[in-house]
Length: 75
Image (cartoon, rainbow, N blue to C red; front, side, top):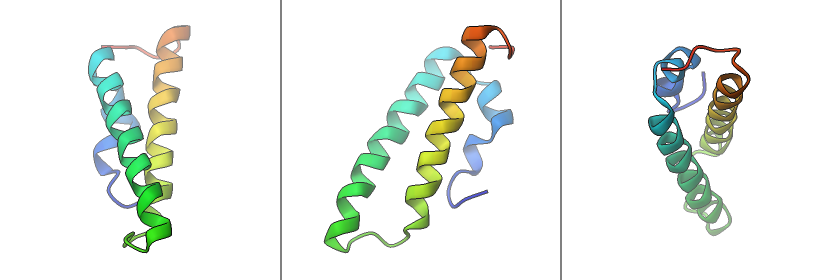
């Protein structure tokens, strides 16, 4: 997996309740926002982190949608 996303594996996401999932999504979006501002100013140390955070957001959205459709078992 990508840098820094070891805590957001699909298995871990399935174990979170809905409120915690929304909180993780908010934090990931906030981090992505900050990383996007760091990139053009030259402060970004790892460009791979941008990709990792985008993938984390996608994983969270996928889990939320699976729960909505009843495909996955939510907590």
